[in-house]
Image 1 (spheres, rainbow, N blue to C red):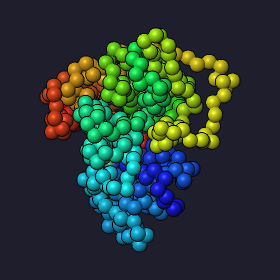
Image 2 (image 1 turned 90 degrees about the horizontal axis):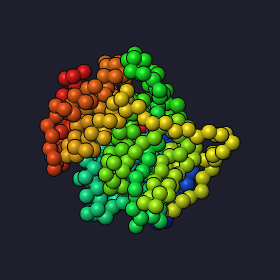
Image 3 (image 1 turned 60 degrees about the vertical axis):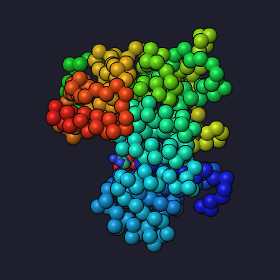
Image 4 (image 1 turned 180 degrees about the vertical axis):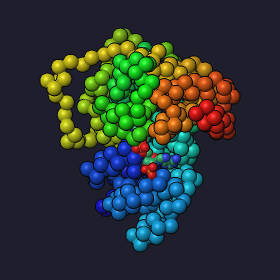
Length: 387
Ligand code: NDP
Ligand code: MG
């Protein structure tokens, strides 16, 4: 691939994941528009190597230091630099060559690299919603200060963002985030008490990484998205509603002051919002499958069951509380989500422990970055004790 000055040079954090590999597919289809400058993984050295050999980035980062030596030796022969460790993620996003940083890593790990990228004035294509959940005020203030755009990749937020094109001076009355309802839509608490991770990992409409798939089953994902929407679009919690839409065709809706509602729709395929964020402000052509109305004679809508799926209500509580509340909820959820995936706790324990951690963790109303770091550590410790 020959780089020309017109190509957008991308640092892709989390290239070996679900979003990462789909982003590379978008880039593969558009070699004249995008060039991969940085690829990073946590420990999947095999896939990272394969990706590096195909996309010829300038630099790769493998966070897991035990994988560094063999990988760097192999890539050195190819003229590709290799770094390791968490701190390297913060360094590589600042490189002069990088035009845009796609944050497709999972969980709290996205926070510090995103801060570093914003301070280096790199536009962010943001898939890593946890960063905004943990420290939304800090991140959006920094983005304003450095005049860095935060381009949403999450499908619902991309939908809202697309609906707002040309509307930036018009007041939003409210937004509706659509939710598929996950694999357990309509299930009672009794039935949920004994579900297995195998059942929870079978999402009806989307193929995603394990963490977000479990979050979708518990409705934590929608809760995290409510918080993400607050910060991306500067809304109050009573302006953010959710509606279950099992077909996942309407990706979200904006309602304006005059009552007009704009929705963005299409088949559920993350490549579209990824491509939109990478190419923004342009739309580029694609051959992704098109929606056919006759395949979907019914689009249906339901209220989310917040009584059974408590995580969604906890997210609204965290929004109301502000400060470090959402950071604590996110940290607890990273522990409980992983514990469920390791068969250490039952499905309903996830929300119960998350709730308990929110109650017990130290609350700071106007947190600094250090307060977020401390809150994250404390909430993880509390959640681990409660497992
Ligand atoms: P995956 O688990 O599939 O991939 C995560 C990526 O991050 C992998 O490259 C992984 O490396 C890397 N990674 C994991 N842990 C760390 C860490 N501690 N430090 C640095 N890198 C790490 O996740 P997804 O692609 O599903 O999700 C990524 C983000 O995008 C999440 O925030 C998710 O909420 C969001 N998102 C995802 C959607 C989807 O369809 N998948 C839809 C909307 C949002 P390795 O492979 O080596 O473990
Ligand atoms: Mg989403």
